[in-house]
Amino acid sequence: MTDKKVYMTLFIILIVFFLVMFFALGIPNILQEAKETTLLVGDNTIFTYQKKKWRLMTDISAKQELDWKKYHVFLEGEYKGEFSLWNEGKWYAFDEEKNGIPLEGTFLAYTSNRSISVFPFTLEEIENKDVVSSFLQEKGLDPSSEFTASYQTSFDFDGDGSNETFYLVSNVFPDFEVSQIFSFVFMMKENQIYPIYEEVLENRSFNGCKPYFHTFLDLDEDNNYEMILSCGRYSVDEPLNMLFQFRNGEFKNIVSSE
Image 1 (cartoon, rainbow, N blue to C red):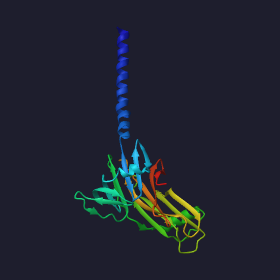
Image 2: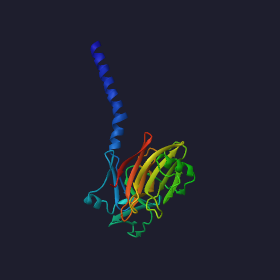
Image 3: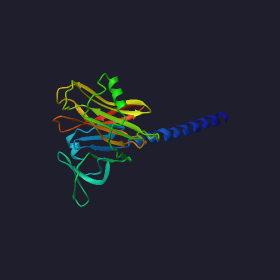
Image 4: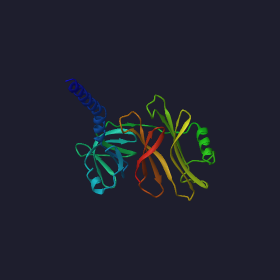
């Protein structure tokens, strides 16, 4: 009888252990597997999230299935409402009465079973020129370089209660003489620089890719933002769109349109 009680006690302990582990790890993992998002970035880029992985949608038939579905629509980071969308080279929006809704400006839309938040950021001219000059010098470039784009934006990107500043500098497509063209995007946090995007090339007049901030958004309900960085090329209609995530002290490009 004593042995049976011991075995029964051990059996109950094992059952309780497996139940605890299932509720602690199994259910959250199952719920995470069920998270799905379709993210429309501009007219030509579709990112999807399924089975805990981001992907670029390239299948034409799959894209056609997205027509006339309802999406949350943002223009220039401002929420415009939920509309039915249809694509014919570009996205068109319609309300409940099938009235057309103009889509002008930086376009983002999504459908998801997550709660997604978009941050309506504003751009400013770079205030601290020394930060950029020092950065360029470390890269072996002229610290007094002229730019064709130089912007910054600041907000609490990682939810720690203090603002981080994002810098973007580029001299791509210059109307002045320069032997090298470059583009850099980086974040400054507590006097430390975190690189995001970098390109340095020999100047051939119209080569290179000029970056711009597309959207800052929280895609996974963790109060830490992700960033969509876009990059425009000369005589190419479709920009390069890249989704960056900040984890373990560095930015990673988790999916892009190329």
